[in-house]
Image (cartoon, rainbow, N blue to C red; front, side, top):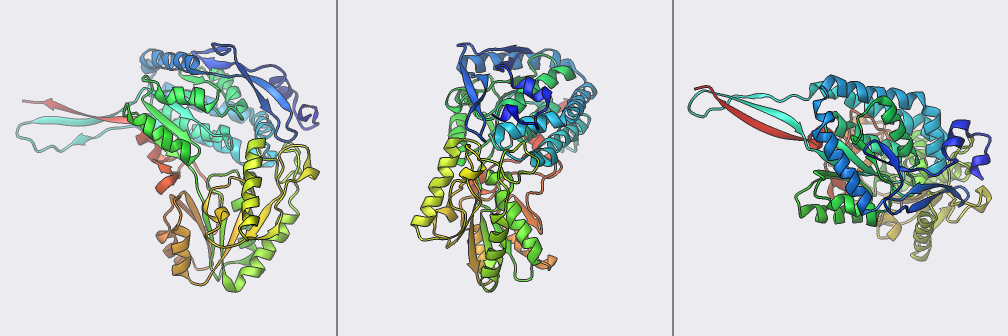
Length: 496
């Protein structure tokens, strides 16, 4: 049992020792129908802790509480006070960084080395970044040309209640991408974490109260997508939905939101190309391929799951990556020596194994892995897997969301750019080269929201994140995110 692990702090053990309620209107409470769900330990498959499971009635209560806060005390707080609250929350998260790192590792299965170096620090960074924007959300005066004398100006105004739905792969960090800009702009939030990974957000709610946020400003309602998620999208009191998840569900949300013209921003799936140019540094290429597909067990929307390699170098590069993949240490995420943890759930493991079987069945060459790893533990472990194949394979076309890489040979630059873009998705891409000018030329031709040159999985609060095509609508992070959480009002004053 993970709770018996020597690496878990007393604070986290205590947090997981009793059922966790939801946060609505500043009060921790059970769901209206007293339903609960079990959060499982992905490393063992055993039950971890019970959490209140919200439904339509709970979403309704949360939206009403958020609306009351928006029109009440929250609307009267000055920008400087709002900024201080966000900054205080960032300080508290940083103060409890070890605790959050453990909770996120235990709940998702990911290595604690990743939660300590990426998930938690980037969460802190996002709250501080958007805290800095609060006092800088300005309008402008307009040089209008209508006959007469007018003062014309614009204001950025908050939307109202924002509904946020976050996935299970980076629950805390992705939540910060939504909560921080929404609150910075003066909105209130109802957030639904995944039913699989709600724990870090429930702890965040406790710190938001400690920071001094008024009741109802941040409401956290765990629950299933077909119940709580659907109710949140359909609620007439919600002015905007921010969703991160699958393209299929994103499409359903977009259709549902159209009825009431609810504003929507969507960060969806990907099938990102990781392109090796002929002059690339061999050691960098291997490290970049590993980071692209095996970071976070491959459960990453921008995972570099298609590795394009020059035909003349194909065998060497694939062999080098496979050699590194074979020695990845899999185990309990909370163990500091673990390099890759289990997949998040049994359903996700079965999905990944299904894709692996389809690769074998369709004739792809299995280079390494390709099976469940029982040696790592009784949970949802799948060995790092590499196939060599062609573009028409299912594993080269569809998002797998697991540690499965398809290596693809190519002969010239025009060909690889065309093939890299031949996908419904367009979230991210990478180019590896010693010729930066060539790298920039290739990057300009790639249809992706983010392109990395000689790097992978590089994120920063200042840099916008989102996709082309079926990878989403709108942008998160950076100043671009602010436009999704405000309305622009134009005012004319007749000066006679």
